[in-house]
Length: 174
Image 1: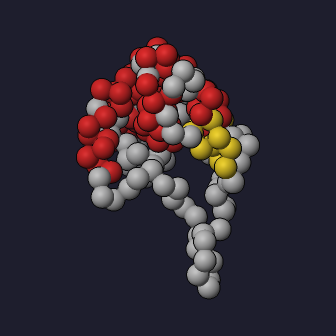
Image 2: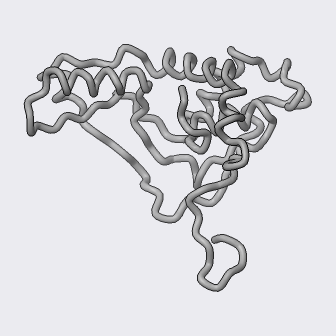
């Protein structure tokens, strides 16, 4: 919830609802550890309250998935929250049919991985949301708050691709 619409989850949800392409960078194999924002905040508060000053704690969900896996899960969650058959923007198509592979961003990390065992072992922190329950709740939030999403984008961002570079002598971005 409240993540700026350029990020993977809100971008995919909002594009899918509008029947727009779901742009997946490269082959979709970039791996991330996914964690619900409420769990991340709870982890930070746990570290602030109980962590040892000067120590480092990684907060993670233990839910590594590729971007393509996440987009597939998002499409499945959208089918539960707002079935594609009831979405006039899809003209009878499915959310999954909107997946489109695009060139990867320059310098895009293939994998972000952390080891969150220390925060669990030393501070007893664990995420409360599973990937499935957190993702479903997040998709439902974006579906219920489309007005907020449109307001935050208005005049500033139309879900165009960010993170590309322009050539040195003008012309189209690379």
